[in-house]
Length: 144
Image 1 (cartoon, one colour):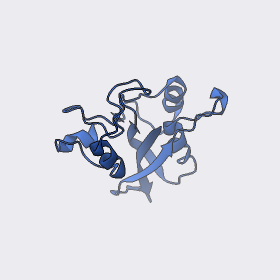
Image 2 (tube, helix red, strand yellow; image 1 turned 45 degrees about the vertical axis):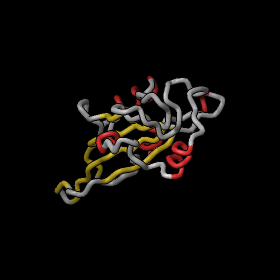
Image 3 (cartoon, helix red, strand yellow; image 1 turned 135 degrees about the horizontal axis):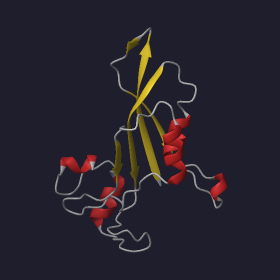
Image 4 (cartoon, one colour; image 1 turned 60 degrees about the vertical axis):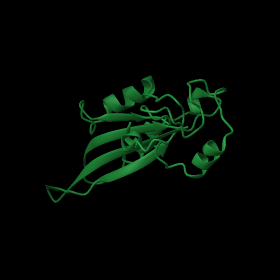
């Protein structure tokens, strides 16, 4: 499962607004690739009819997997052809494992989605509080 948050700026009456705006998209991948959509494209499609859109300022892509995911080829082509995404827009990738201590929100400590699961009480508590920071309190782990 993947979620993308796309931040953008607006210009109203010739003046750039200072507020931060964003849209959120999630991936939907049925059994056929022809019917799939990535989280980034799902979020960007919401901007299609946005009046006063100036530019995309940041794209954040997060997954509940142990390894972060980068945009795939179709998504990269879509973003490259989007007239409001600058070539130097920051794209931030996130995952469910703290890079400092290895704490994992999903209980999956390695990249193999079928192994490394733990049924400990700590895992169950973390599942109840999905927005928790890592067990060692690494504040920066929320942003990496």
